[in-house]
Image 1 (cartoon, helix red, strand yellow):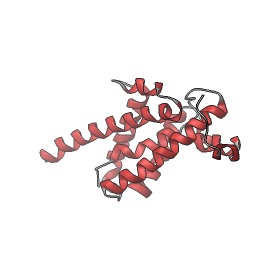
Image 2 (cartoon, helix red, strand yellow):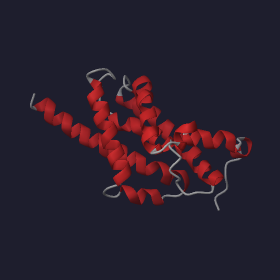
Image 3 (cartoon, helix red, strand yellow):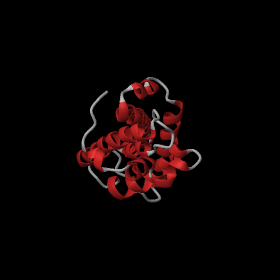
Image 4 (cartoon, helix red, strand yellow):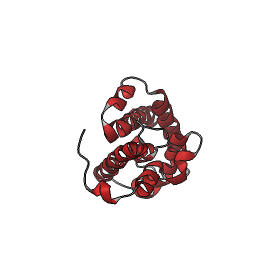
Length: 168
């Protein structure tokens, strides 16, 4: 078994698990959807106005923290990728919009809604090779499939934008 970082000895389960479940959101019906809904304001406030490089750096940091917390929450809960862990959806969702510069306003709202729906579709259906990523160990397996769903969503949105803006 891999040795855990000593920091985890100081953080009680009453901190780790609520971080991974985003408090009560992980207890709701369709928790992954609620974790994604919670990520919409995260995107609008912290990511929507960033250039691609700072956007990616901030998101990579958030994703790495999600890997650590989700992996430890799995250990604390004694379950492999339980549905109530939603920090993975929350952290991956902004990637759906990497490279887009629309504001989270009336112009951006249809794109955000479309990205949300595509992200949920890819996260639930796990097409292509996305489902295989869940086999990665620990928090990597919890987060990687959501990152892949976000990247797939981004690619579809980029294609839609290319079509609409090149034919407009």
